[in-house]
Amino acid sequence: MTGPAARQPVILTAGDPSGIGPEIAVKARLRLQGHTPIIWLGDPRHLPPGTAFAEVTQLSEAADVPGDILPVLAHRFAAPARPGLPDPLNAAGVVAVIERAVALVQAGEASALCTAPIHKKALKDGAGFAFPGHTEFLAHLAGVDRVVMMLACEGLRVVPVTIHIPLADVPASLTPALLEETIRVTHAGLIRDFGLAAPRLLVAGLNPHAGEGGAMGHEEASVIAPVIARLCAEGMAIRGPASADTMFHAAARAGYDAAICMYHDQALIPIKTIDFAGGVNLTLGLPFVRTSPDHGTAYDIAGQGLADPSSLIAALMMAAQMGAARGGRHGHD
Picture 1 (cartoon, rainbow, N blue to C red):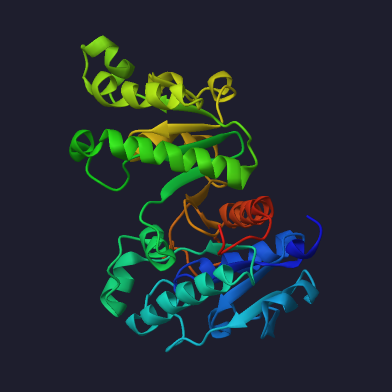
Picture 2 (spheres, one colour):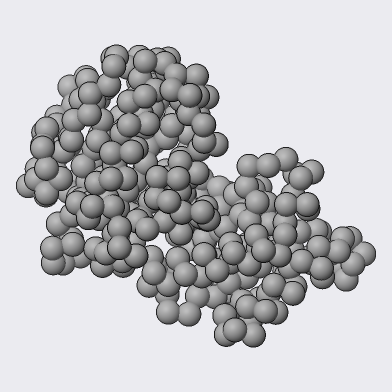
């Protein structure tokens, strides 16, 4: 990256201070050595003992901090953090950090947002958090009605149309409107955030063998195929419905830029099989770039120095690349 936009850091939220977020932030900074400029937003008391950090007051100061030191924009929480033991007193601080980070990136002071893991139950218990997760809260803060969750790693991008609902509820939830909107947001995101002039999309069927001509289900013919035909007629490079069990081997993956999947596991099993440690969760459709590591708070290993920062490193690097692709126009898209 070059020019003023390259000097803007990716802002990394603290996430749940009792999880692995603080320790993987430090590990990621040491691995990246400043090549991807970041600034951590959280309470310095929650960083691992002995962490070398530099407290700054402006995000622009992050670029001047040596690569082996973590730039910190301090946000004081109500209580210290105990690894593996979430404190309800800190729940409001976790939420406030996300709100502050969104305000900063929308103001153009950061190139992108990367969020460390939160624990939804801990936030609900401690702060009355009313959202299913990060994604819905970020959409609320941005004033956006529809966003899309994408999981990405080297060589594969997947988008689940339905996400955190029971499998039994998927057929009724899979409407033509939802499918079309998901595809359109994905297509636009691939152009804007990944620099793909003409994204190639492959759409999975819902049923085994993509319904096998109606012998194993009707959703392919009644819901999926008409949407694909309509978008194809508009000039979109889109194919399907395809049998999901043939979509994810290496030769198949070379034929598309993103796979549109009908439900959570259809999308997440292949990407976690291909790159369990390095997958990135990102949100398309926001007026700013947002990525996140594809794992949770990992309370069971928090504070033990065992946490793998690979997914966070990938998320930070992808956030910086996507921010550069948008050209520093955050908050104005």
